[in-house]
Image (cartoon, rainbow, N blue to C red; front, side, top):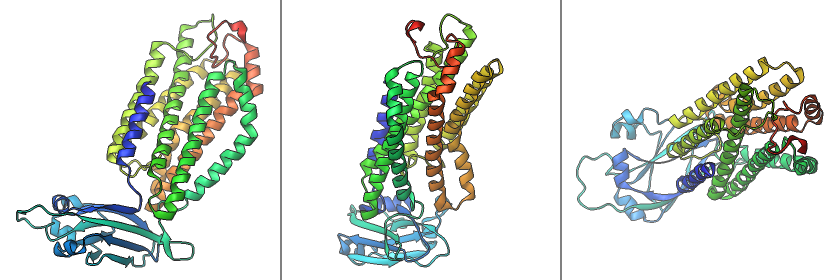
Length: 431
């Protein structure tokens, strides 16, 4: 229940704080612009040429009376240390809001760059008190990149380009794999046996990953047409991925802790099984709870919701450190098991299990480090695509391990007492 509560709270937070993509609806607020030295609107990675920014206003006379402007910057680093006037003077582009609709062409650039948009008016940098309340100006901003034909019709930022096609290919791969392997997997689940619980968890995790990919594809298919997409689908995609992460984390930790505790008791009266002692359960639950808190914290720090981030915020960095610590913990546990194991066949079982675990936990931290060698607009794509592929491969490795007929039956024939990962709770003669 606590796992469900954590992921549900995270999902609700995502729905509340999710942004509406690169077609932006909102209000220009003079009080907010004055308080923040410019009201931050959004950022967008423009491609090399033919970029376009379109704004539409509802109350043009009010905007003219307030001398409203949109400022566009390449870089906002160090803005907190600048005065209001210095910040305004550093804008690469200044656009007066004097018409109901205006199309602003983005200058040619040598490589894709991020443009940050701020709103300012005559009250932003003044120190005089404002006697009467200031009305807000409703707006719509559309940000467009060139499409294949070179026309500014593409709503995707340069950092999102290609993800739509990637999700489509991944859905196709999931569909083909399910057609080939669904029946054998279903038969294995129907038979039950020592591997039954692990196979169920892996199947649910893979199903949730597939649903996450499908929801992301639906969101981006709509996003490609209107720049807004279906934010609910994006939130559902991240929710499904978080549930899969929680399930896998709990399963892998429970297995390793259970194996270690079973060996420390040196009990030969029952098979080595997924230990359900208070110690192993509390360790796994503590790690899951910590991960859930960090995920919720991250939602307050990062409003651009993706399944996998570049982790520039404090909770993001702590999440990466948690994964590294868990990988080291699993490495220590599995080393103790394999170093005392005399059977080469069983050592191979544990080593292959370790590969799947390490790939699952370490792919995200490693890819975040490697993304530093790529351009800024490529980093999010490298992390997102890399983590999804690596974790899918990890699940496949674990599937092959637990479904491997030769390995499983050879191990089980060696000794039913020391069979790895036996989930049986009843008498041993059931198997």
